[in-house]
Image (cartoon, rainbow, N blue to C red; front, top):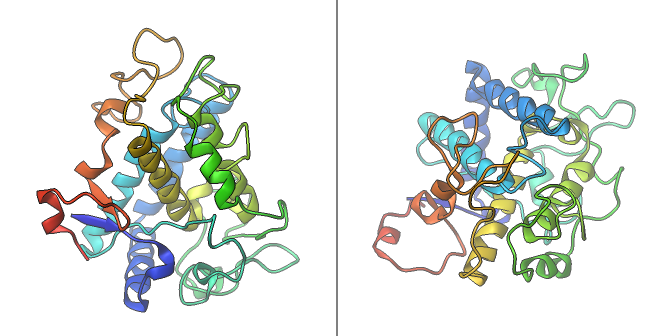
Length: 286
């Protein structure tokens, strides 16, 4: 079974396998299809016509399935690859290892935000931005320019203590764990990371930046930790709720996936911090 590791603990071989698999998906066009899917749901979310992937209870199960699909695509290229997670409450600066030239590359140059180093630099010739919100064909970042600080462990801990998954009005005004983790209220967790990275990460085409997957893998891990802490606190809402996805409703764009299907991450993968010792763990991929 797949094990998702903290990016800070990856070996040089694991980093190279992850970035090479991404580059192969980019070469075949598969990567851009993921960007298009995400962008289409961001745009719908903004006008409240189809609140599935953001500002709604299904934010977390939708992205769990989205990452699973991406991870499956990576593993068709290289079965050893898993999506690493970026613990942005620990690795909080532009000097952290994930921004090194041997992994994701660093921040962009001052005049236009263009990332100039690492495997995804435009000048390397293998990672053009094809699904765009403007005419710039290169990956952009402005690490720390638009918001100074990433969330702290104390801020994360405060959100993990919230006992209710979601609550009416089931949107960006909800006082709930989901909404505080998503970042519309409270310490601004998930949303703040997109703004801190800058560039494409501030837009609907945020998966253009490979850090998107590592960021959302950590968001997914925080949901898993919250579930372990609050075993009696279920996904809400359960049924009959207009304009959002109830527990057993289908999540678009899939025809057969519901939030209920996504509640147990251990059916699909483990995190390197999981402590369960059931029989599945014997088959963990290292």
